[in-house]
Image (cartoon, rainbow, N blue to C red; front, side, top):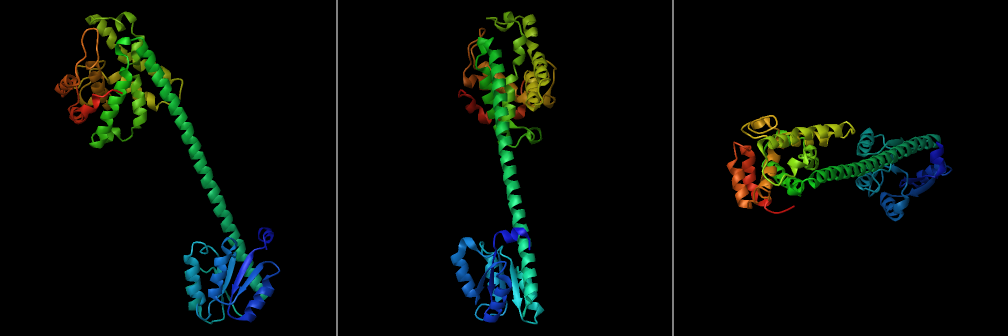
Amino acid sequence: MSDSIKACKTSVMVVDDNITNLKYAKAALSEMYDVFTVPSSAKMFSIIDTLRDGLPSLILLDINMPEMDGIEAVKILKNRVETRDIPVIFLTSRNDPDSEVEGLALGAVDYIAKPFQPHLLRKRVEIHLTMEFQRQTLERQKLDLQNFNENLKRMVEEKTGRVLELQGAILSTLADLVESRDDITGGHVQRTKRQLGILVAALQDFGLYREDTASWDIDLLLQSSQLHDVGKISIRDSILLKPGKLTPEEFEEMKRHSALGVKIIEKIGTSTSERAFLEHSKIFARSHHEKWDGTGYPDGLRGEGIPLQGRLMAIADVYDALVSDRPYKKAFSHDEASHIIIDGSGTHFDPVLIDVFKEVENQFRFGP
């Protein structure tokens, strides 16, 4: 017998209505195991109910007993959560292979014919206890591996959360740095991020542009939107901070902030392997001033040739510009701004997205 089995004197329960059989079994097994001898199935269940935490490691169960035979008893054992994993070996004096097959089908692991030989009984019990010990060991290892994987997953999620938190803080700080040079548009980044979130959520609710949005991590997308105007950091103060309307030449230079923003984001990308959010940022930066009819900048894209991120940001960006004070204009009311946005359907904006905007435009009127 294995040292693992010997180390904790394993308990074996022998259930038989024949006292002689019980004595022979105890004599054969008691040197190696704690042996419980039980004269009936009913008594077996009574003892098991009192043991609870010290259940037998194996049960030798006679098939042919009065009142409750072994077949009925094993059915009950296998239906109980606390006893279903205890190996059961049938003791049988029947020349009845059908009963043996039935018992094995119900979950018994083996059968031993009576009268049994002590050395054979010991060996069969040892084999099945060793197998049960190995099964339990594998279950523990499986549980340990499951716990390890769950702990590892939790650690990865926590680390990922910290990375995303840091990433968000960096994006937000960089966006704030851009806005700190331009007191005129203060708060624009956070407002457009919120409005973009409203549009994206509605887009998903209505099941529109599913193929485009299927791979989007929405939190990442919204974080990335904060860099849509990062190119303004390269625009001269005399233009960025001009308290009046820009001349055509100045406006041409201001328009460069879209392409400049892409260059800045690409430069950030050379220093990190976390580039997924930067891909969204580049798209936002380059395409949020494109127009549905092709008259936008910097690339003159039109229709669905404009990335969906840019088409969405165009609505949020223009809306926020309309409802904000500028040196050259007073802020429009929400209703006025919404009317202008809706009138831009098919020229400035994607008509499908304008239909979405109509459904949620009241949500835009509230601040971040």
